[in-house]
Image (spheres, rainbow, N blue to C red):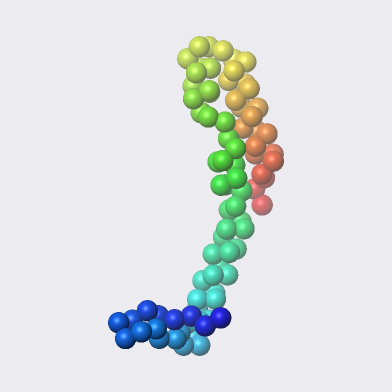
Length: 81
């Protein structure tokens, strides 16, 4: 697929070198996303940290441990590559 630069005089097609450079950038980005995709998945499923703080303030070790267990379950579900 041809790419273009937007200019005041209209679109200007990329040169072969610019196409190759852009393809390399996109491949690097895709590799980074694949390697770090677990981070977003973990963040979306981690329990609210307020539950942990609430357990600490109350001195409720069972609540604190439940939070830790929930975090460890998310880490096991989405391991680092």
